[in-house]
Length: 97
Image (cartoon, rainbow, N blue to C red):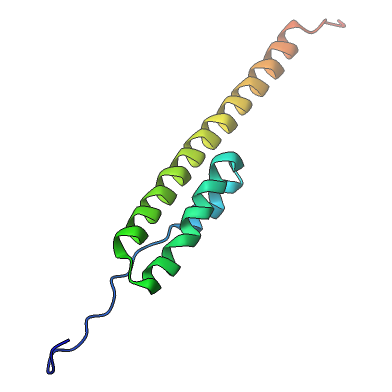
């Protein structure tokens, strides 16, 4: 380091932990690797491994997005099937008139 030049702070990298935790409620099998990768970001930054921290953050984001997408599709399909079965059951029910 040269005298007279201030040391630059390390770049901040979003570890995507919030998105990983939210995704665990929607589709937990894919949220687990997201949380594992998100938990690696800060220690890698402290060690000075910025490329490794960015790679872990990118992996966390990828797994979180997959878990969110699959979880939302799963919930939507469940709601549609329940509504279809409920309406179908009401329409095919016997009339007591």
